[in-house]
Length: 323
Image (tube, rainbow, N blue to C red):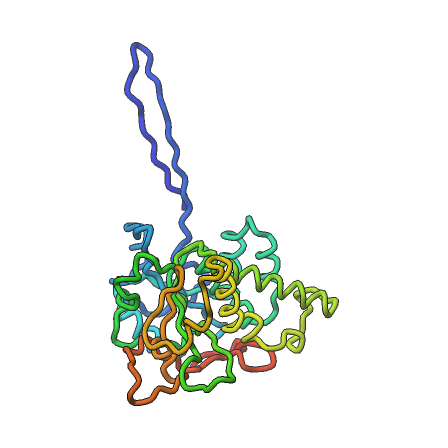
């Protein structure tokens, strides 16, 4: 929608001069005809985003969700509502396959490499991973998977007061405590927070594009012709390990020798590294970490219910009817 304001200038001498100032702006609609509707209380209307403008230092109070072909199950609605009901001031937006494609084509028209790669991907989980990073880079806010429920702490309190001004990306460890020494730490991707235009999220996007280029060259195929076998480990390709490596690489490029990965291992309280706030495992992934009774723990912020539909040979759910 284009918004215009016209102003008449004052009459100068005997000749009337008309000065017209035209201010265009485009606002992506909170819902569209391709978005599957879900019951949302009236107080959560998405038009509120047009009425207020968050401060430059704030992470937008918006939660992004991506729907699969089957829409929402009743269980998913309950998990989602646990977040929306406890955070009534937060806007929410649900993208479908079609509206997600339309969003990327419009918002990233200046990056044809991103648009072409995104539209060519044939596996839903790869597109879902790619889309969450694109949304966070372009508009910021919170990306949440459909199988995530919120605990009692309001989202506005997830970031400790002393870090709110500086934190531009907030991630939480999925695997951190109680795994011994021979494991790969990774951030959870089912819940991510970010300000728009973060260079760390941009690094994730660029690294995915590079991985796609390498895969297609290795197998002499186009992105559209990549097979599930060629993709390999999704967690590594576009998922948590990809995001973790890219964010840490971006931090190293920013901080240089000031950053040591060992300083963010076995966290028991949030830690700010540059402008990335890393939350302990108990924040986003309590069930994936193994704490001792004597360990200092804060509250779990979300619970991931591991109801993902991508763990099959076609990387996503089929368009079956929801009962």
